[in-house]
Length: 411
Image 1 (cartoon, rainbow, N blue to C red):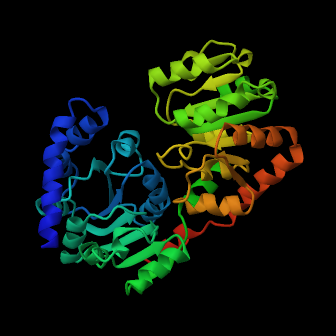
Image 2 (image 1 turned 180 degrees about the vertical axis):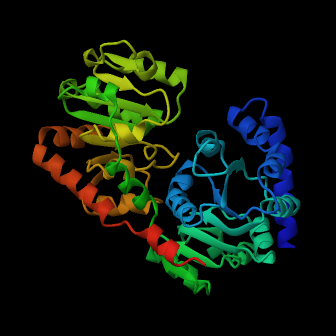
């Protein structure tokens, strides 16, 4: 009965999605992107290929899975790597990633789709990253004898698995051969359900970002823009974040800094609105060529793919997403460069932020007054700024090793 209700819900959701594609750009990508998935798989995968399948909900999960993907490709260079995404925000950015041989959207979780997908991909191993559990795919993997792993898993007590009515989803969990989880809380929750095939490996993102500091992070435009001034990078911001940052940016102390703002969503209306509220001269990255960047105090990055390297030029980082309800973005990218980090107030689902706050490498603010106060201290007190940044950098270095643990324990 539970499976009938679940499948009815999936088919019902599919029917409701179709009309929304006409007035929602993201939903249009979600639907249109799934039209040719099976055709692409038929073209790119032969019956003789050995394949490994990674499923990532979106971009953040891809970054967590990437170190394992790279490790498996190095171990078995002839194996084809198939990566699926649920969200357009992950697929559109990583559809051409060189680490994968095939990148497609995951067809909706119906029994027929799962059967057809696995017949075409015929993976030797399957990896689900962090969370997003699709029962029909998991049941089909189990039936086909495919070894299936959860990596960088993260469980919370309020999830459906731990509710009295979560029996169907608990059956889906039983399809995993092994769980590699981020923390002991997740371990204990799974053990409470009777699962013993669990290892606390940590978060693979630490391995991912720790390598970034060893790479060439030079950006000519940042050398020109920053000059010798203190630089604050505001990464993956939303309007709610920008609202609390504006009082500091427009303050007298703010005039002594250089600011880089990299909005999470690059929308013309929001960028225009932001620039209209700034008292300091600002310029967009896409308009900065052949421009004397040193004459501007604020650089707005209206493109993707540059933020990680830009953090290497920062003295202070503000990471967006937690002032509203969209979800905190990656704090580990600035932390690996040894930066003090400021975030918004909603970060209870992000254990790395909680840990970093506990050891004073990160500060959470509730409003613009608190944001102004901590930023003034970070700018004015060099020792405090450097100590906070040192804590962040050490935090990343001391939490690496998840990838090695996973690779050593999969068969």
